[in-house]
Image (cartoon, rainbow, N blue to C red; front, side, top):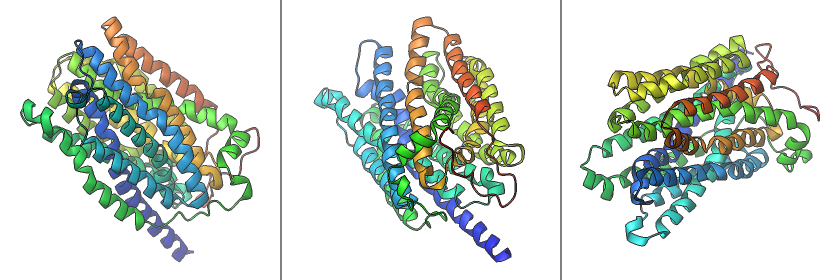
Length: 435
């Protein structure tokens, strides 16, 4: 018994290290686009007489990546359920790495005209395809190897890897932003994208050395098409899972991408905003395992719902603090928004979503729920920017995020608690057809 427990702990630790490293490397690439869309692409790929129009165009391409994510989720979820999590994750990392590196080589609108934004859209679609398959696989590499009574704590580390990827990408953009404007806009912005080739090589090396999940996958005839099984057996769970994510991901879009556009509109210093986002994501990553551990004791639902309430209530104060122009208030806004409001949800999400589905469709289930919700809220930065441009006030933007949080609160309230009852409880049993 002791030897088996020790082996499981060792396997869980290796899965955590591999997932953190892989997720950090993968999402470094994906998040680079967030900063570039707000600071670079609007000027170099979508020139317009009105800066607001150019920003809306750049954010539209940012949103396009989310449209591809459900397709990637279904494709790589199927591969992961049939052939193993590890195979799927190596493919997602490879596609992401090639697309991101190619972005750093793209000619601008001034050089090739509308071919520039067209090629940018194609590469963003490839990024979305890869990101759609990444999240579920990275989560399952941990949760399927973790002790049942600590699944919340261990699962949260996969999201800490996502946060780390964002911190590194923000730091890379912050450093090149220190160049003179002429150098930054001519070649400096390309460096973080071209540097991703090193990240890609390191990521594939790490991923190939991570052990496959401890649970068998793809060994059932009825899972030949996992999406069919999901739609038949889990319709209610799928809908509630999608609803549960709207407030979390909508809040993340507000705290990261829209905040840069809004900050620029109200005169906040770009460098201060970037530092605030970095420190906020560090706080987010540090607090995710804390909230995951709390969910192991109190349950997944109460912790997640508390995060939703906090996010809804903090939406307007967050935007108001960005308006202040105060460095300390801007940084505090990002630390509170990410380290408390967002971390309380994303730290619980891996365990909550993993426990919703049986093993042979689990990857597909996670990917479907996660990425369909991503499409719905992928328009948050664009719609928020449009609301602010129309009304000239942060109030409609805050109300918009509050509405998303309300939908998520109701969805989580209708879900059944998934936290295991005992130390050695397995994942929940297969769902009945009406689940």
